[in-house]
Amino acid sequence: MKKIVAILLAVLMVLAMSAVAEERLYIPVMAKGFQHQFWQVVKEGAEAAGQELGVAINFQGPPSESDIQAQVDMLNSALSKNPSAICLAALDTGSVTSQLTDAAAAGIPVIGFDSGVPDAPEGQVKATAATDNAAAAGLAATEMMKDSAFAEKVKAATPDSPVRVAVLSQDATSTSVTQRTQGFIDTFKAAAE
Image 1 (cartoon, rainbow, N blue to C red):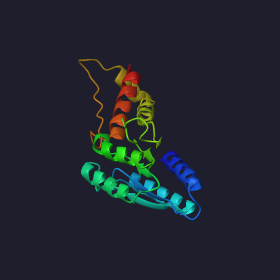
Image 2 (tube, rainbow, N blue to C red):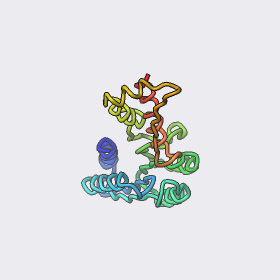
Image 3 (cartoon, rainbow, N blue to C red):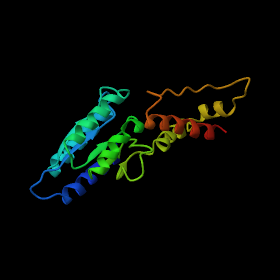
Image 4 (spheres, rainbow, N blue to C red):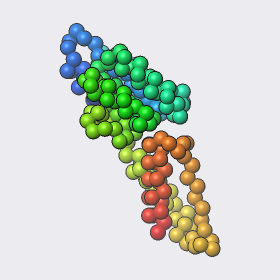
């Protein structure tokens, strides 16, 4: 989280330094939603960076991470205001490809954050500030296996006496969530062998 806010701050600083002195930068920051505390922390960091650098920040996000059309509408609205740049954590890259093309044609840099804009056409996302979700979740699996009693039980499992470990994810479509889920599973399986 701190890494993402720091990278967004760096991007804002670069954009601020390249602006004409009397012109105030306007950067909409579009999250995947507002429902989680994570997004509230990102909002606070983006707004604090904007205030520090004299950049107008408009933090937006749909009510939930399944409201893809709401995010597309927000992106269309942001583009109509000709912003200095756009920070985007895309819910679905396929749903925003025409907006990415429009931004590139208008010379509006798009900066991805969180899981960014996965599989965006080359050159349409100028930078991405993201966590390695698979590695982060792998740390959880590694830590779990440090419990020697648990690790012994897992390693002693057989088809007749299995050990079941449930992995619950908050959704099945978000790239960051699916990467975390798979990262945990892969690391856990490797540690269990």
